[in-house]
Length: 470
Image 1 (cartoon, rainbow, N blue to C red):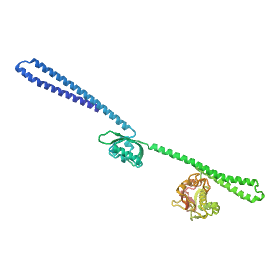
Image 2: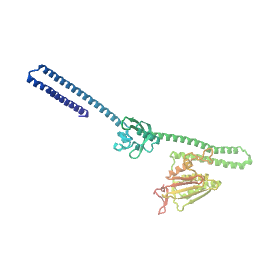
Image 3: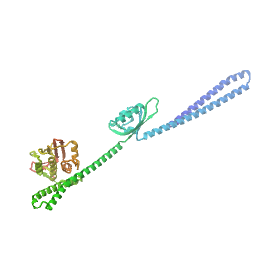
């Protein structure tokens, strides 16, 4: 039997009991009225008029009691039906609140008085016992702004409505999520009650952040492209103008036979401009291959000292012309490494060229090599050049970027040297670390891992540390 049927049956039983009781009382009253009359009739003779009057009064009284009883039963039925409707309505709203996917909470005087099941799960609690009677303010995470926190506390303190705001709610495991919170006051004569509703908007915020980051990346790529085009316009046009101009002078015999020595100088300028142009194009092609993951290594066993010496010979003339001293220091017994010889030289040449380029006359560049703590090899290039701050250092690693703007930069280049060097080093499984300070200089460390090192075996043969010979 459900609660409604039980209440209705109990009410009807109560009404029948009232009916029986009132019937018994009515009979008792009638008997109490008739007994004296009967007694008097027995003593003095019959009184027919009085007997009829008493009988009519008794009948009316019984009818009246019966009518009152029926009305009582009807009233009980109405009350039972109304109670059932109220319970159905309460159960309906309870089901709606329970099924709501959002957090629904009732705050009584600033404390949690009720929280629905989805809200309990959203807060990461095993049951609502971990949340009930807690201050609502304790659920606000550290990410909630001071303004929004103040709005929430003011609404709870006054039992007033809360405009829509964004807060961070803390879970039981210490994590937090972004939620959109609103509140409406609940009527109460004694307490300050507020109905709070919260919706998890963490995914929405993550999507917004991702879109914003993607937009910034697209804008950065667009700026980088524009910067690249501006740089390439300068880097390509300058040597091409020299090549075309000097070629025309020689072809037209502009200075006649007496200008022959000058033609030789112009020919050298044409050669140097061509080489510079070839370097620019090679840098672009190298980076394109690396970026497309088309670069493959052709490993060979290399003596680090020989590679460093060969690289220094390439830049020595440039260093002497700039008044920069080049020195090298190779630790004795340094084992050879397995690497792509051409790409290893390219790494060193890029670093050395930058060191010489950004070191003013009277400065120096030191190249050293030794064993690293992990058993690998470290090649270090230190200069006393202009140096860079943290922002400039981060910019230097971006492809096609220049630390100085196109309009005022003193030093030519595509802005691909460091990105190519870093990519080629990582292609060998190594790493590139740069430390720099403005006015002090720059230190570049090229680290090759232990798996790239070869050692002399007891039998006199060279073997790689990992046991694999490339």
